[in-house]
Length: 252
Image (tube, rainbow, N blue to C red; front, side, top):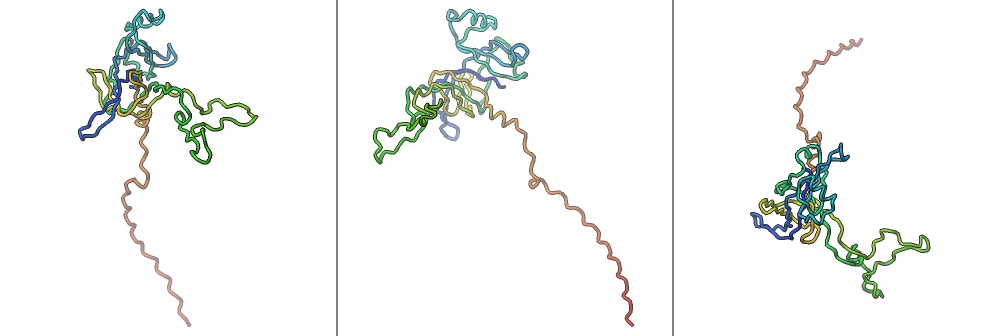
């Protein structure tokens, strides 16, 4: 199923395998996501499932948002997130139903999206991994500076997108191909191997891995001719008798 879940990053810990190997994992709390709307191609132009998560006081909602939640007969949530789905997945869900952590299984590969931690104002070496200048040969007070940022009178300006110092972090990022090593249904927890973007308590979106699903759907290549089984040797043809040579004429 292509539908994902919206959860909250609780932090990192580690678990031990049966062989004694230490595995670093990120704990994501995924409370039941409530379906608020099922969009169709006929009505909306595309097929998607809209879900909400968490709880919000009704007095903080606008009238349009309150009417949207009332129409779906679900409690108001903190926000709305959509997941594109196919016709098969869409038929299994209806407005008012819930999606829980059992949507994923142990060993499944997922993509996790979140907002990175803010780092404040940072220089080019920290923000863009610049190498910096020499620490010798007369270089002073410019070891971590970016260097030249423009050209001469033509064009006479700095092009947009130039890598310079500035605000670092607080951007939406996705970490791909992370594996789920544990699913705790009673406590609504997902244990994901590795680190995911965002600070503790931040919102994260867990989806099934796009690349893993594409790899699984690829066709298996046909074996090469060299690897094919050798054919049975053909039976030898019977030897045919050679025609008799004509007699030579006698010498006089």
